[in-house]
Length: 242
Image 1: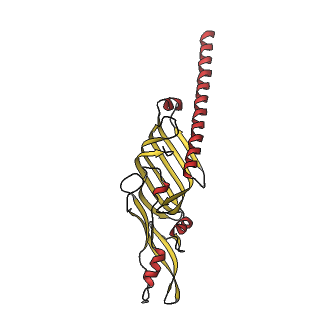
Image 2 (image 1 turned 90 degrees about the vertical axis):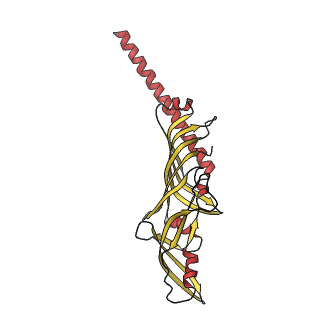
Image 3 (image 1 turned 180 degrees about the vertical axis):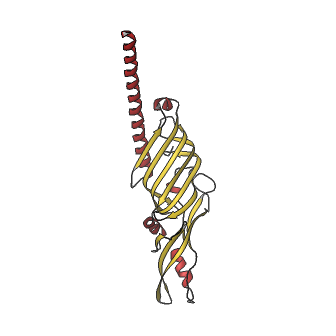
């Protein structure tokens, strides 16, 4: 009985040591992967990585991870020479095939979300227009000023923010989309040229291809008090720029 008790104690201790080593290894891998993503993306904010599944070391030896969650803050999406700040980007990568040196991998599929706040959307307009919530899903309020016939006119309009097909393809995946903001109606009050002048300030489109992992594309969009929420998905999605 003493021998069996000794064996049980040894097994428990070894198991605890193995579990501890596995947790240390996964923590180290998460930190290194987060550092690589942050460096490659040039993030203004933070990057956090969570690797799911146990034991981690078995997954690592097989070069395939069940699931990896990535949380990024302060992502600058650059496309067509224009920058749009994503306040948050959250993505879940599944079936990640790691490359030979473990510096990254490719996920069979991934889903995620991103948030553009109204101050960041205002900056993205690059026209001096101010954007706020429009009071209904998919609607934003845009306030802009324009000079017509020597006078300055200021108008606040309700605009629809939506996804439309992008011109010239996307970030390594078909069906690329562009975020478009367009006023539903601009009151002209019978003044020639005022609608066109205001629309030059209120209406714009922005592509975000440069800020998303290759293979991840925009699939949905809505707006609420917090900002514009983007839905993301894709297959064969790059993780850490591999």
